[in-house]
Length: 70
Image 1: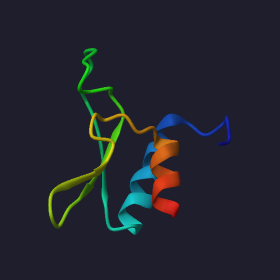
Image 2: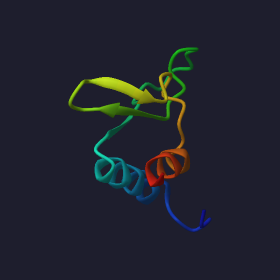
Image 3: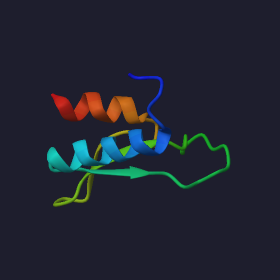
Image 4: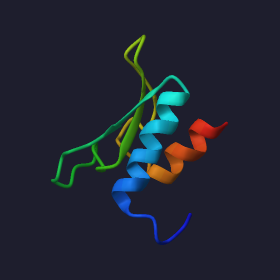
């Protein structure tokens, strides 16, 4: 990934890629360190409200892009 892309722009790209794949990329807003919440992304199927990937909010924006490009 390009090192000059800002984190906000990368997050926006991940959300758009998820939307194109019919998913929702949810980013955790939890700031404390938790074993169940790692502060990154989770992919959710909006029709079934089912977690597709990143159960522990453990997907980076790059991983979301890779998952949704398949």
